[in-house]
Image 1 (cartoon, one colour):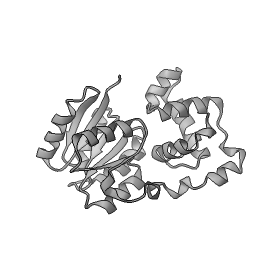
Image 2: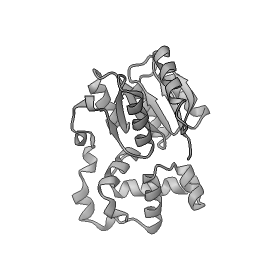
Image 3: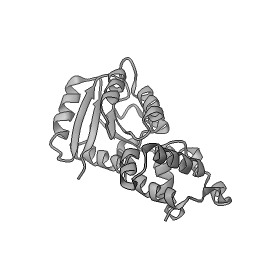
Image 4: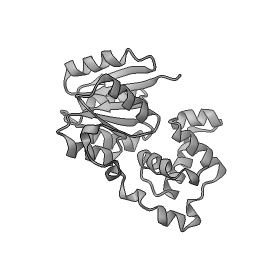
Amino acid sequence: MQNIKLILVDKHNVFLEGVTQCLRNEKDFQVIGQATDGLTALKLVDEKTPNLIVTDLSMPVINGLELIKKLTASNPDIKFLIMAEATEKSSVKMALDLGAMGYVSKSASIQDLTKAIRLVDSGHSYFDPSLSIPKRQYVSTSLIKQGKILRSDNWRLTRQEKRILKLIMKGLTSREIAQELNLSKRTIQNHRASIMKKFHTKNLVELVKFSLGNQFLYD
């Protein structure tokens, strides 16, 4: 089993250390970095290659929302799980709109946190029960274009695009897909951009959410 490489970001050092120690007990987790602000997190990402970032939202220098915005543009393979106070619901909603794939409360158990990490890493969403908002509210309006897609032949995927999308849905990164299919990373990124255009999705999160509900498009 391939390890899930994690960077943890939280403004409270004590909380950060506590979570880190708990996660290090999980055999499939590898905590490769910690940061107490968004700027440090950006520098860590430049030095390391995380699969997933677990981040707070309220932080100095660069907050969690800006961090997600910057990294989803520059490193679209990285997935985000928000770990914040239950009182930050409006910020959590904004983070999900920006590309985060899940939210877990800081008061959640370590079992819930590890479950959330594994789900998000595999391309699924996770929403803490405390968020008490229907999940469908987080689906971007661009996903409500299925009718437009199905009335046109423009959505049809090539055989190669279908193969790539199935691997994306398994949680593989562009680099891993390139190795699997013996293609260049740039070729995989170009195919992914084509798939996203056909499905009218703006980022990896929207692509995964749309594809989960419309599997017949690439089976």
